[in-house]
Length: 312
Image 1 (tube, rainbow, N blue to C red):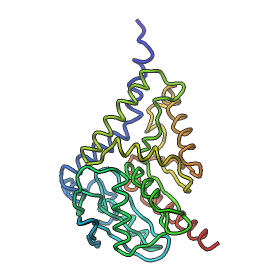
Image 2: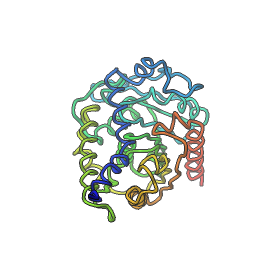
Image 3: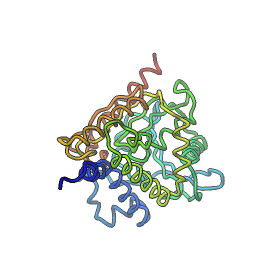
C-alpha cells in the first residue's frame, strides 16, 4: 500500500526546521554550562575557527533599573555596530567580529538579561529586552545611528530594538545584517502548496521552539510574537545572509522543500521590502564562525553605505 502523501512529506518539514532545532539545542547547552565562554572551554575551543581570537572581556556593567547589564564597546566612528547574539549566547560569541569591526567604526556587544555577566530579570518579553539594550547604551553614552548585526534568535531582538529607536535619520537603526536569523513571522502553516500534515508540523515545531526560548532565556514567547506582529514589516535596509536552502529545507529535488523555500522567499520579501538576500554557501548555522571573513566584509560594506547616506 502506498503511504499517504502527508506521511511521506511530514519528515521533510522536520528537516525544514533543523537549523532552528540545532540553534535551540546549542543555546540550551550554552545556558546549562554557564555561558559561551564556559561552553568553549569545556570543548577545548573546538567550535571556534582555528585562527579566531579568544574573547577578552573589556566591557563593563551599567545599571539598568537596578540590574547590572554587561556592555562591551570598542573602536570609534559612526555608525555604531550593535552585535546581537543568537539563543543563549552573548558578547563572548563575537570576539572575531568585535576586533575586525572596531578597526573601522564603533562596535558594541552585550549580554542579554540572565546571560553571561548580566543579571536576570525574570520572565520578560523581547521588547523589554530591547529596552534594556537601549537603556544600557544611553547610560554608557553610546549614540546612533546604529547598524545591527544579528545571528539566529538575535534577529527577533534586533527588530524590536529598531522599533524603539525612532528614525534611521537620527539615532535610530540605519541597517540590519541578519545572519541566518530565526524569522517566526515566516508563517509557512498557511503557505499554498503545502498539505495539512506539513502545516500541522510547522505549527507544532514553532510552538516547541518558542517554549525552549522561554525556558532558556526567560523570554515570554507568546507576548514577544505579539510584539513582532504589532511591529509588522520593516522598511530599514537589510542584508539577509541565510545558509543555503538545501540546508534549511532538505533535498531540493523533492516538491515539499521547493514549496517551503518559495514560501520563505515570498514572506521574507514582504517582511523586508528594502531587503536583499545573499545565500551563504558552505556554511552551517554559525555563519560568523564558519565564514568570519565574509561576515566581516559584509558588515564593513553596510557600515560604508550608512556612512555615505549620512554624508549625502
